[in-house]
Image 1 (cartoon, helix red, strand yellow):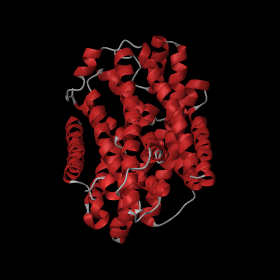
Image 2: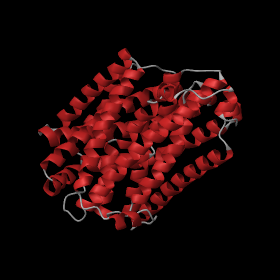
Image 3: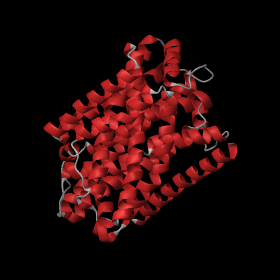
Image 4: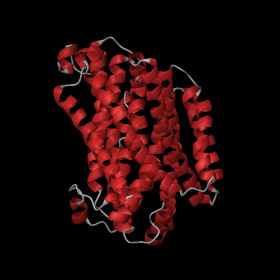
Length: 415
């Protein structure tokens, strides 16, 4: 593939133009710091210390490759991944594919609403069911920003919430007794029994999220539109590399900070297998101020991620079924399963962790078509994936699939 400067015959656009093109990846990155991440990472750190740090490092590296390919697909083709699949699948397979994608989206939404409800309970003592309703209504307000003010305004609101999330989950790390040597040792891949594999799968599902794979192609398409000009496409892909790299560096740092905080401050503390217990331990160990900051970060995570998740669900339905449902209407309907979980009294933290396992099983269904489409010269033309990127994508899909198979074998063998 020719370099950008060679293609345009002049210098690339200035830095300011590149900065103005940033944004879609930061919206997609919210999926990587949602309440499911909080539950999985805190549980892993409190239960196993630094053991599973390597999972986050690997998952974030995979996420960078995946999200760039998703955005690239939307920029080059002017269509989202669900739209491309909807055009190529027969009616039966297309509907079946939509069902599994919607199940994944439902699992995502449950985690996000539960996380926001837990945060409201921690901050104000609001009952979980009432908190879930409040989170749902608030997310409708965020979606109205996208509907009436456009995607750029929506991106600004989401990035502001991302900043709150960063502050909420990173601040406590500066007051914890981090052990650098053990943290470095945590980069070496290993497990300690079936439960650690379950948690690793949950962390992977919470980091490389299927709905973010579908969503990013739609975000890039909606922001940049369809262009047949190779010059503009080269520039947008260049800007997208900065967008994805920056956004996922932030998301990866937040995830790692959560696990390090739990490993350094919550290891061996009773009751830290739930978010509420972890919050109580944070307050007892690091002080009430850090506890409030932590809960505020969790609330911002729930509000932002449930709005972004609804956007993703709309893109999935629109692409595969060719049905356009208003975002606020979809938000109202998809809120029901989360409220049912809250209403029946199911352990919210356990529901969060299990939801991330469901997401992990949905990753290959999103990742395999993505790598295929992004590597196809028929679809992408001269912008098809280079050989190294194509192989990196297939290896990533293979690793995730193998981990899921191992999980099934271990869980079935333990029952």
